[in-house]
Image (tube, rainbow, N blue to C red; front, side, top):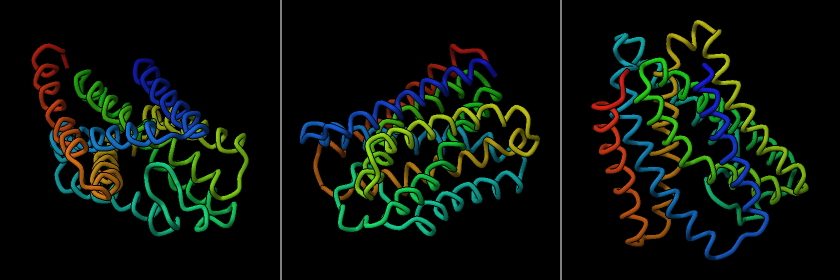
Length: 243
């Protein structure tokens, strides 16, 4: 558990970095963020489909159902219960007229970040190679995630202090996911499958639409590069890192 917890702490640090960056946005920063989102989406989708789902469904229909539940849970919290949610910097302040909107977005992301921790812990339960791949996939979207919650909090009228506090809560949620996976039987048995659904949703339904908002070659290349780097890393870790 200690190894998974250390990786979760590193991921939480990326959340905080994203929250700090958004306090001084720039055109260059937004372009870099766009490439990060594209690269992260490719890596996450590949991680979910190639690395996580095959192990998640080894338990049969129960595992498949858990993948679906994980996918739908994120949709419920981020796009049904939370209005006007998208990854990346929030620039539509006119749509964020109430502080409660920022709080609602934070609550939606807390479930997602909790399962980030569950995914890391569950990956290491399968083997070090999968734990490392899941960690990298999660790390790649942590900074945009911090940007997302901090900018939504600011756009909905909350202070910079509250925005950074919200980012810190995301990190705490990730750590809690690691810890509870070790002690809650349901998470220990179905955590990988639930997390596979969550990871697939974040990559395909949250990040890819952000990339598609602007058709440009660098973002397209970054997405395919993310998937390609995953597979190359996957083959190397499977061969040289002991389960």
